[in-house]
Length: 329
Image (tube, rainbow, N blue to C red; front, side):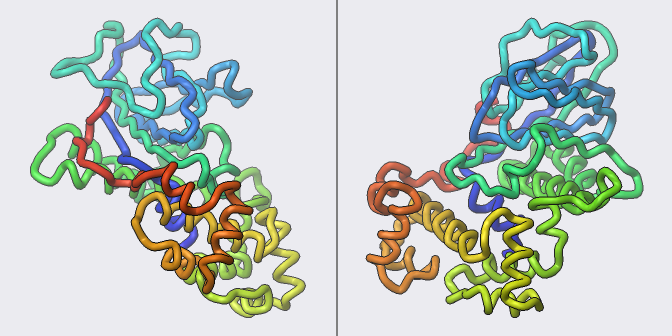
C-alpha cells in the first residue's frame, strides 16, 4: 500500500458516520473535544464560520462557503455558526459524532438564510496515531476550487446523494465514500503543501513530496517484513547510505530503522486487536522470525506483552458490526 492509504487503514477503528444537516440563521453548534476522533464539515449551501473554542487552540476562525471542506484531524473542540458573534445555546454534539439531523424537518434554529452541511466523523486509535496526521494543524481548510481538487468535490456530491435518498446498498456505500473523501482531502492538503506560503514545506509534508524519502517510505510500507537495512533503503531511494539517513531523519524526525520499528509495532498492535492470528504469524508479518524476539520488541515498545495487549483490545476492527449511515447520530 502507499503510505497515506496504509496510515488511514491502520489508524481507523469503528465505522465512519455522517449526516446532512440544515441550519437557519441565527444558529451555532458546539462540538466538544473528542480525542481519538476526526471530523469533516462540508458546506453544500450557504456559508458558516468554524471557530475553535478558546480553550482548545489559538488558531483563527475559518470562513467556509459552498464547496469548502474543513477537516478536524484530532477532534479539537470547535463551534460551527452562521456568524462569528452567534452564541451557542444548544448542548454540545456527542464527541466524535456529527449532529443529529431533525427527523423529516429542518432544524429549529432561526428563520434566516439556510446553510446545508455534510458532516462526517471518524474514530481513530490514539495509540496508533501516525506522525503524518499529528503534523497537521488543528483545522485543515480546503477551499472549493473549480480548477483543482475535483476528487473531493465528486465524493461530496455522491455522499450527499446517498444521504438525501437512501437506496439499496447505501449502508455499504456511505462508509466507503467517507473513507474516500478523507483520503482525497489529505491527498490535496499534502499535495499542495510545498506551495503554501511560497516556500517548501517541512516535516512530513516535505517527506511525502521528496522523491528519495518517499521512495524509502513506500518500500517500508509495501513490505514491512522485509529485512530492511539503511543501505537497502538507500538503494531504493537512489542515494548513498549516509545521504539517505540524513535526509530521512531531517524530514520525518526519526532515523529510517527507528521509523521502521515503530511502524512494524504499530502494524502488530493492529493485527493483535483485529485478528485471531497466532503470535508467530503476527511476528512474521512484521519482520520477526522469532516469536520471542517479537514479544520482547513489542513489550519494549508498548509496555505490555502482546498477549496481554490483545486481551485488553478485543476485536476493535474498522467494520465490526453493522450500522446504518446515520446510526448513533
